[in-house]
Image (tube, rainbow, N blue to C red; front, top):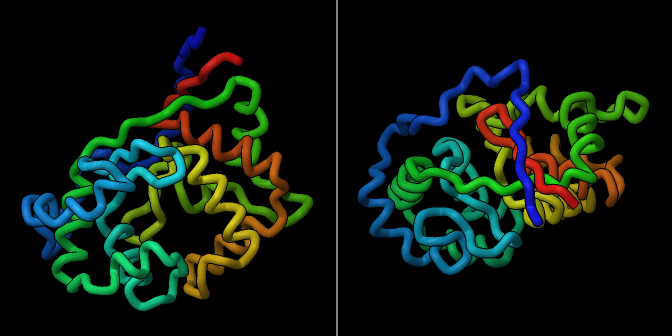
Length: 213
């Protein structure tokens, strides 16, 4: 039996989950172009598989930047590089505007992993020089649109864990934010990655949804 309780954190990121204006992008045009994305990310940007990221509610600035990096090959992903290859700059702006305008369906954190995941998220690992995630992604995990730091709260745990392992292995390309994440993930163990991904999956709007097991 699953139970949920909400824990309100004291600090909230100074960001709104309302749609961020994105210059030059049309949500309506993006919706029409998003059919090719639905198989992995869902028609509204909420993936039906935990292996793929939710795009709904993600910052348009981040989505546009990642599509640009996939297209150029600076960020590595055979699937996404192929998908982005024929996108125009306007296509990328429209898709970013559309998915950012949707509402992310958040998950729940495992009760058994919450404490470890929260310690990593809020405090990092000082002894190993691993910074807290809050420094870039904010105390509620809502990211920083001007800096193109993504929202990570509410994201699918399997996807987050896979990405952290890939960054640790140096498999995500040589671009500025990628190098930052490679340095952060380098010292994380598989157990710590699992705990952090679970915690983030249940974090949304400064609250935490837990499942008991």
